[in-house]
Length: 193
Image: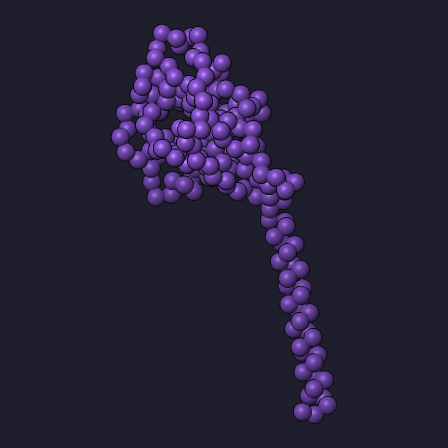
């Protein structure tokens, strides 16, 4: 190889290497920009009956057969279940006892729960919960119900996504609306002490 050809080869090789390095730097900067403070991510837990403990019934509902359970959730957020008449279930999430909705009490033994959140300071911070629940007289399938974790330590329902081909992505999209601002509750929660 002549001296000129070798010199040209080295220059082209160095230019290619410099372009590759610049491309990687630009890609890293774009990735950091695309998810400031961490974009939406999901964490999953499973609710098992054996991990729950019973708690008292609210005075306003003593005349109805009521059974409440407090279950581990994710971090400081608990799962609150209130069963009525052996057929109905109300559900809530958070540090304080609360429940929303009216659902069919039949559920899987190891109930999957999707916690939607973002990474902040290297820590997962949830802002919503997605849970499959059936309406009181629905025997199969089920809606994906999106609960917002609210500032007072409770939760409320912000969306119910009926069964369909894009049910999971629609539920996550509704949960992620919380990142862009305030989302009104469809159903307020009620405290249970």
